[in-house]
Image 1 (cartoon, rainbow, N blue to C red):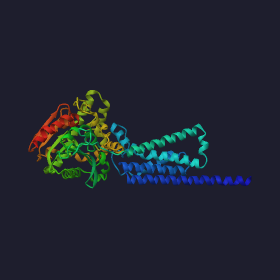
Image 2 (image 1 turned 135 degrees about the horizontal axis):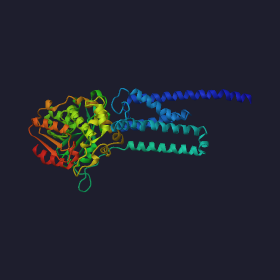
Image 3 (image 1 turned 30 degrees about the vertical axis):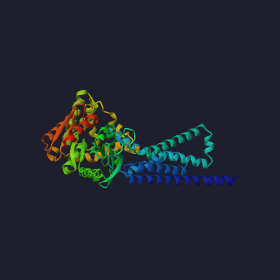
Image 4 (image 1 turned 90 degrees about the vertical axis):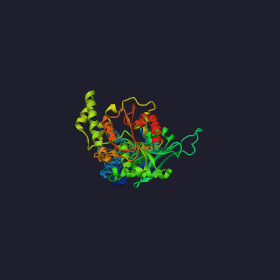
Length: 506
């Protein structure tokens, strides 16, 4: 009896020592996985392939960890260690979704959810669920699982593990859902012969970037649409509000580098410059000209897209029939200062003290903190509370516009984060832009579509530039039920303007 007791006394500490050694090995393994992920994916997974791969790897890692350690605390410890290592190694990455966490505004919450929130769902949660199942399997192999299963608590834990695993499987299925765009239907409901409806990619500036092409007749004039931002994705917005255009144009919606379906092209941010974006615009233009056999195409730019469009047309007018600016931008810094003053005046006039206090604390633009811009540029309800056109669809606005089949689940979530991160890279580069000085003339017909409810900080400068501008022909038209985005606020009227005015004159 004494011999058995002595052997047990010696075995207990040895078993505990082995358990501690296994725990150390597990922690090192999890930390190494987090470090590698941070090096390879500094912004986390941003494509479907990356999201699914990381999810599977983390779940498998968790399963291994659960099999190798008996401690229940590892269910929390493993994700925490992984997250700490991941965050540590990706410190050089910058942007609202990867910088420090701030919860002072709606946009900071969006940055958190579209950035670290998505990281948690596709990495940390599967890792924790994997650990839970690893521990269950280890206990079953040791003969403890059946005994635990006899208790109510054991059954509850098992049921919770099953539910968690099912949710991970549902998430995986959601991530694997492919992006699609519906064909253009003919009178019989079948795809219209000669039409084009596709999602494609083209290599631009060394990066694969996304295009949505839709039109009833591939021989129609090509229209390239440039969304605003910088950082906005126009595919969903045009899918909702641009269907009428597809009758008379082959509409090409380009997700610019770092946006929507092209969000994986954000890095390296050192090469994401306004100059490069202009070069990319011309490259996409050349691709469309060659693809559809047309010497010139139409260019429509909205907000930031109007800045990009003017610069592209100025550099290569021979590629374009005409330029159409919606929500035309002219002098970014002066507009920001005027809109700041408008927003502060509204807040003080209406008693919105919280907004007024934030605006006074921030001071007038420009800002180093990109999350300070929304208060100045979009918090004023006067910029959106007006009678829209009868055919206006709220689904053309963010974030509702992301919920179309043309985006995968990863693109839908990361698309909102891309708006913020790409904005943070490009917007500071626009502070010296002033078309009144830099673009006195364009060698193509110019059409500016302005909303009657546009901010004076934008509209006044657009008119000032337009009046000075020299062009073969030009026209400025005001839509009385529109704001900054007349092509979305009154899509039918915008379509009529292009067909009845722009096409005949160009």
